[in-house]
Amino acid sequence: MKKGEIVRWDYEGWTVAPKPEDCELFDTTDEKLARERGIYREEASYGPTPIIIGAERLVKGLEASLLEADVDKEVELVLPPAQAFGERDARKMEIHSLSEILRLPEFRRGDRDPVPGARVVLGNREGRIVSVRGGRVRVDYNHELAGKTLRYKYIIRSRVEAPEDKVAAILEIHYGRQPGFKVDVKGTEASITVAERCKFDPQWTLTKIMVVRDLREHVGLSTIRFVEEYTKPVEGPAPDEAAVAPEGVGGAVTDAAETESKGAVAQESAQKSPEPKPPSGGEAPDPSTSPDTTG
Image (cartoon, rainbow, N blue to C red):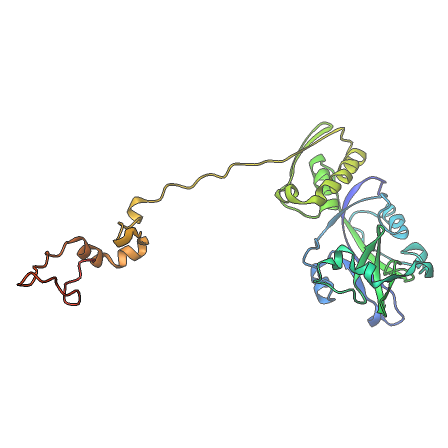
């Protein structure tokens, strides 16, 4: 592989332990394996995933191995901590007050509690709560795989070569496998119609900057346009007059289905009953004995 190439790969990442049964799967593109090992995530993308060779976004040992890899050739390697996520650093264990932690956006709404294992972001650093005692919270800012030997197994499935496919791959790298993007590349210019979600996602504004950087460096584009489309909804046809029932007493409109089921009643209601004759003596008729004329 050459530095800067865009490829699609499948991989598994495991921790190494003295007993094989104690090895833990921490990442994979294999959905079935993720489900079997209990690490499946609904928001994750499974199947061959795009990466940029030599972009220094993976651990050092894996980056070096990919530069020597070939398409359709499976590779397995074991990386010591120095070639993976580094050794654990005691200086990255810090103590914060509980009140400071509770002010973080993660807990401000009150629907989450700061408990061991919860992730927090303080000063642009991501950490994991280790303990909560007496109003003090201990946070570990080491990577959760720091100090561990790791085993990777991977295979490069294909090179991404067409300009439109490269643009789509970079969008997927930074924004996930989001349907709705439309890409048109002509020479060194690209027009990208963004997915519907982007119009309402504040994160897209930051993601777009990284997308532009990679498109310039790894696809060779000089001009990149992002297009938002807003199409006026097509109005539906006017309601069928036959489906609207005639106005009843009080001006109420009956549902078409109800009108059909009560057709006989509606027809009878349309015929006016004869005007009742007042009883002899000119007395007003008793309402309880008068025939119903409301229909």
